[in-house]
Length: 137
Image (tube, rainbow, N blue to C red; front, side, top):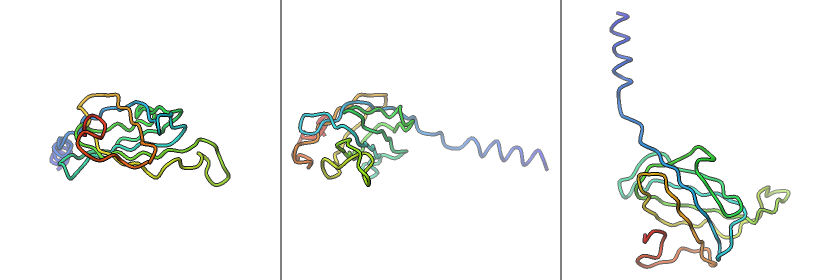
């Protein structure tokens, strides 16, 4: 009985492989100036068949790196969400006041560690039209 149980545990452990995760780093600007503080989230775009864990990083002085949070992501199509803050701590807002509404865009990440810069337009709204997003998205 013990041999059967051990065999089942070993077989159950040989299921799906965890997806390969990659790190993303880069710069985030708002109207051409570095975003003082904030966060960036890379969500695999399930509507385009991509799945896996989301990548996350804090933005500090206009720079981010998912290595700092240990939360890399898979390659492929992603929805990107960026929050930008002025970095001036307040009583109720320890990281500062929002500079713009949450900025959303799409990107296709390679299946390798990569650098990707984002420039949030001064309007804080995504640009529309072919090739208007990062990397031609």
